Length: 600
Image (cartoon, rainbow, N blue to C red):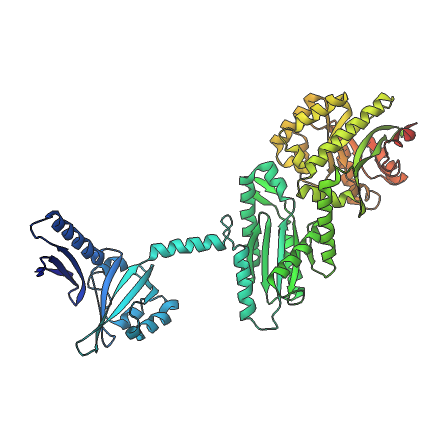
């Protein structure tokens, strides 16, 4: 189908000269371009401008992004301009010339709209249709189609003419924008907005008696990975977690990423029993480590579950309930799941009060330290002490460190609290030294402090301020800092150069291994209370403790057993050559004024 034009000049009695082009599409009139000039001999440049505009108009109908078409009055035959071949990737004589032939090219989901469009052509003047079609290479092309009705002199329909524009590029951009608004860019999982929309859709479409479960899944201690290894590696861990969730749950769940280390799972047609089985399955799956760059990461997860319609029917309420249940798991030791119960809300309110109170605790002098003596198991002599933080809230009373320390870490208040403990413990130890009581003092340090670039300098300045010899200070770190061995060794070496000793606290409960301990400059290994509790009743635990003691002696570590409560436990440790210990058998944590009495 070709395009041609007719040029003519019209002189009006007023002297105005019209230059006109009628544009035709072989099968009918398309448009007219008209300019005028008062004097044919004046402004000759205007003629070249008109010619250029005429070419531009023709190019509109001959470009490679749109094509013209016409349909006969019986809505059977279709003719189109040559551009259709390029847009649809078909040979010039292969394009469909029957409406019925076009039907097979239309994307199935769009076919009803296409048929309705054809059926209502008489009423479509100025209205458009967006439709997907398959091109000659079976790729999807988006077309936006406009139509006008051509009538004969008697007002009867002669034919239908229109324009179809290839809008695939625009649609792809819109889809990308839509995906950005509904999908997480890192994991490609749906985001919270998409999750909410999906839940609402399922709620409307399913029967009234459908049961659904929402699971909020949080990666325990994920911030430690980012702190120790950087955000890039942390992102790789999140991608692996997303993949593991998809592989485990498949089509049985709708999975979304809610925030940095939190995922949302919707289980459809799932009663409470089935939901619990799936939660158990997820816990078991995450017992296997994730491997990234030849490095293994042992992750645990905490899950909160809410139930539709049992606990709530509104998505916002269901999300809040699942989050409350998840925080209850966090507060109870992590690595588990919990189904929301009505009295759980009181627990989350307590947590919020604790977090708010911690921000004011230092300025209101509500925090204080107790000191637990450490003894030589052979002689019973106190040789040192460990500083233990306590908090007396004005309304809640005594709040356990097991409750407020995790909250302080999550809110990052732990850094200020940690440095206050360091300052206060060193200050108190100097007072004892001035009174002739020469003890070393152990201070626990959080991972966030350990990662502070000014960590070493702050310790150094605190020791100088109180004039305490660094050899009387022990820094206790948890095994989690061992995940980044290079960084750990650098910090530990700087502390050694300063004269400070390093202890690994709660050994056996975290990330380290014997090979790691052989490659870092530590002085002391502390055996966790959970192992000491079982040395007299569990053969495997007893064997493990014996191994730790022997390993420590071979590496020239001091071994300290925590949580000794009975004479039999102390005797077992002495027989197996553990030299040092602490626990209620020897002394409970003491106020500063009471410790000298214990020594004398």
